[in-house]
Structure formats: structure tokens, C-alpha cells
Length: 383
Picture 1 (cartoon, rainbow, N blue to C red):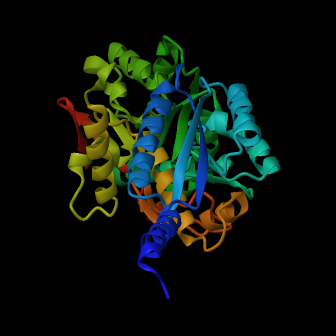
Picture 2: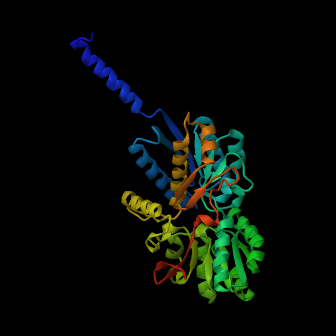
Picture 3: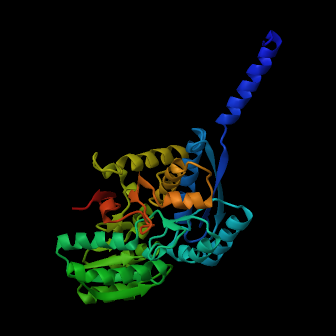
């Protein structure tokens, strides 16, 4: 028989047991390597912010299946060697369960070997298809590959009737991969390269290459580089009177492109992620709800509109959350890897459908991009 004196003790014990049960059973440690300083910080800063914003929201709601999400971020400074060093620190010292980033193709490519050797799942944010083709066991990506992106651009060119392209690419992993992909896809679309020009992303003047593009007589110019080079090209083209349409690849899909180009920005096209112009999206766009949420939440928290690149880390968080929800037993590096490979979730970058043969999760059917044109001070859906 239970005495009255023992009832409070039993209630306290029951409360403690229930409270303990409600607490997260484990903390999932996320390590992120982003360029928070240096020339590529325009990628890393919005990615770190969006990721922290999402994780704070999830943790405030109790985590994922009772698991809190802990974030550790290190600065790569946009340097591949530094990225590998920081990755090793996360894996060996911090014992993270999963790695997000790096932000650029060049940095990310240098991390693949270590990630697979250490058997830690990675969700990178690079554009080159070399990250996930061929597939390696532990490397995934949250960004449409350049093959998906360039196929989208060429489809638009075909609709416009363009036959020849002046291709301008940066001398780095992103630019070189883009050129290889373009060359492999051109026959399928009945097009050819009139001239292929290369430059360094930090070059202060690219007029010589622009002049050769004009002399080639190409129907359109396609610029495949991250910032700041596309802004320099726009200015140089404007200065020499280049009068053919200029298209910029998604690696430079940012308001910085047009803000720093001044009058030269008028008429520029960009194959973009939707976050650059969320107000232009139709109500039935399948990724509109996610895109609008990122935009509104980021604006409320940071008092400024998010750069496009914020959605890469945000989507990585959605991918991870979906993976954790599907795990019935312990959450660790191996179970996370296996679960990520089966994730099916809609993010701002499109509908992700991962599989053992698709670690990018996206293809043309995922509808990850929109074509925008800058007209009279704002981005519009290009027709």
C-alpha cells in the first residue's frame, strides 16, 4: 500500500522520468567549412547564416526525433588547402557526424578523398558534377550540378534560336568543369562554340577576351564564373559596345552582380536560383513555399535579403533532417550516410531524390533554376 508521504516522491520520480525521456537522446554534430573571409565570403556568409537560422528553429521546436543539432563552423578563407585542414579538424578533433560544405567547387573537390577515407557523410555546396560523378560513398551535394544548369541554359538558347556561343570561363574548378560539360552537351542541342575565352576570377580587366567574343560573331555570350569576374565582363562589354545578349551562369547569381556593374547591368540574363527574385515566382511553383520561407525568415533575422547561396545550406539542413527522421536506431556517421542516400524532399533548389547512383539528388526534372533578366533596376522572369 502506498502511503500519503510517498506519493510526492513517486510523482517527482515520474516527472523526472518523463522529463528525461523528453530530452534529446543524442546531439547530432554538424561541421561546416565555409569561406567566412576572403574573396569567396559572399558564398560562405549567407550559407552560415541560413544554416544557423534553420538549426535554431529546429532546436527550438525540440530537435529532430528528439535529437538536438549542434553546429561547428570553421573558416576556409576560400582556400582548398585550408578547407582540408579544417575538415580534418572537424572529423578528428570535433568528432562531427556530418560535414556541410565547402562552398565552392574547387575547395570541395579537394575534400572528397579525406571524407571517403574517414567515412564521414558530406553534403557539399559546389556546382561541378565531378563532386558526385562518379558517385563516391560518402559525398553528396545540395546544389544543381553544372550539367543540369548548362542543359537548362542550352534549352533556353534553343528556344531563342541561338546557334553559336562565345563562352567565357574562369580558370578554376567551376569554370573548367563548366567548359567540359558544355562541350559534351552542344551536339545534342545543335550548337557550337564560336570562341572559348578564359580568365582569372579576380582579373581587373577582361576586355581582350570580350573583344574576341565580339569578333567571333556569336549569337550570345555565356559567362561561367563566380564573382567578381562576371561584373568586370559586363562593364568591359558595355564599354566596347558589345551588342549581343550576355548570359551569366548560376555561380554568380547575386544582386552583387548588378549592383557593381552599374549601367552595364541592364539587360543581363542569369540562370538563377529562385531566391534571387522570390516575388516573381508563380503560385504553383513547387519550391515557392520553401523559397518564400527562407526569404522571410532570413530578412526578419538578419535585416537584409538573403543571397541566393543561402538556400544551399538551408537545403542541406532539410536533407539532414529528413535523413534523421527516417533512422529507427542510433544516429551516427554510417546510419546518416545510408539515410541521406534515400532522402526524397523538396528544397529551394528543387525536388531532391537521392539514390545509390544519384548523390546530387537533382536532375532536369527537379526544375531547380529560372532564367531571369535585369530590366530597369529589377529581375524579371525572362521570356
